[in-house]
Every structure is written in structure tokens, then in C-alpha cells.
Image: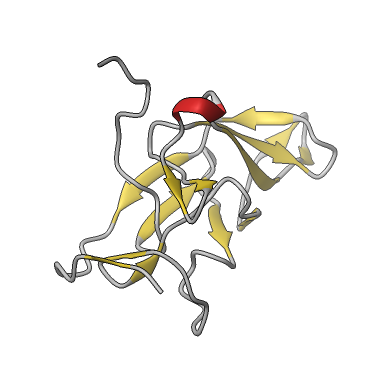
Length: 124
């Protein structure tokens, strides 16, 4: 059984940043409250449909600010994707790239997990 889906599921308890110190936030998985969906340790699971915005990036090119503003995830083949409610979820091993406002690639995001106490997996 070969699969490319090895890794940890990205959820609202995951810290994601750009390579220049900015922080990537997903309104859907960020635990903004109230949204139904699949949860791990009480935090919503992030999917390929979730937009991620970067704040606080200090990247400068040739003396001009060129901050990261978004993260785009490139999930593996749809046929072997890990899914929740039919939508591919993000893994910490899912390929991704941070982009500037002008869609200039800025480098891959940095993914780290925060232990939120073991509450387990739940669904709506």
C-alpha cells in the first residue's frame, strides 16, 4: 500500500508562518469560533479550500518591502488525498508556497504544531 499522504493534519492549533517571520492565518481553521466541521484536539481541520493570509512579513527585496501576503497549498493527486467531508485536508507535508501581493513566490511556509491537550477527533 503506497501513499504520498504521510504527515500530520494541519488544523487551527497549527502555527504556520512565512520564511521571513510573518504568520499565516486561515479564517476557516483558525478557530474563529462557531464553524462546524471536522476537529482535531478541538481545532478545525484545514482544507485545500481554505484561504491563508500572511500578516507581519518583513521581507525586503532591493530595499523595497515585498512581504508575503498569502500561502497557496498544492495538494497531491486528488485520488489519494486525505479527505474530511469530501474535501482534501492539508498535511504538514503538503507542498505549499508563500506569495507576495504581486504573486511572486517567496518560499515555502514553516509549519509547527501547538499541543492543545488531547481531546481527540470529532465531527459535526
